Image (cartoon, rainbow, N blue to C red; front, side, top):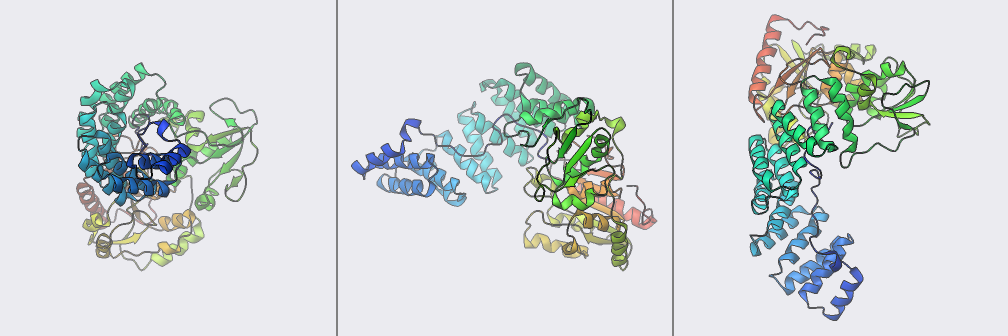
Length: 531
């Protein structure tokens, strides 16, 4: 899933925009003007603007470079050259162009905003935050800069600073509802849910249909276990900017009686979400005929799900005609799910023959056999917070009576020095032999313990009932209830949460201690399924 808290509308837009008036963007007129006065820097820049608007980026860059040569003091020739480079994802050149513009006009807030956006695209978040902050200082009501600064501060784990900034600019904002939502978001990230709820309520009093505020209300309700309210508010996610029901056959099913109709159940987010929510398919199958879309990586594994009907991979089989369609993530709302009737585990199963084969392969490994997964999908918006640099696993090395097995497939592109830290763990790495998540499930079933960041591997271990320890970030995802080390979703899962944003050291110390205790006292007999 994506980040479970939401800033105001437009917060996810990191694009750079052309600030010139529309009347200056007529391409044919701009070309005629340049033919009449080819050495006029302003006319060259205007032609560049028209080409930029037409998304002819390289031609626009050529115009801006010539305009800059004709008049090196033309601020917007420098700036808009940066826009053209940014449109080509050429961030180093874009940054250089924006800095050249800022050298000429250091007091211009739009230039700081553009530079900050380019810096953020390269991962230089501290420098990006400084430029966003300069824009906000000069334009306290600039909603784009406010959102980008808040998001960047949160990404940097400077949570209290984000809250302070958002409160400081509140009197300058005309979008009062979204302003209160943004403050609520910053409080959610700090775990201050009651205060956050007050802010979200203020946002909805002013704008009752503000979808991101309803979404944040769902996050708060999830975090405190109020699932009936949470699922209701959760459905507002479809009304957030950039989010809509996929073009599938049939109208959306909510909670109305099915009366023998056919329903297409489809995926919505990542593989971890699919594994977590497919548990509701058997309940839905009791009410209707289902057609279940399945990602190819999960096809064999989902075939072990009781009640799964008409499984198909959309890349190979077209969607069948159906009366209704529903996302897996909307099934709990339609089925009236709460903490009391949450389906228990295991509901997915590893193939026995594969498990037997893996146990034979792992037999030479002495002691407690522990699988490790330290990184998730880098495309996930909060991956920088959940994934670990391999060097952070170093404290686990040398734990008496423990053998480590890699479950890490893909994930973050760590540096060679970081990867070298894994050598101390003496990892056995069979991942090249895993073709899909059915293979991975069999390997997991042959292990004594799984230690994983918040990724599909943790869900898979929990779904098949294997002991799994979750390395959890401070700004936890909604599914792991606040202040709890257990999970009603997966009884075999134990949560180890950062005590402070970004602080993995205490987590790893506790994991090492607990793992050593289990190994020394033989409390983890092979085949045991409690976490």
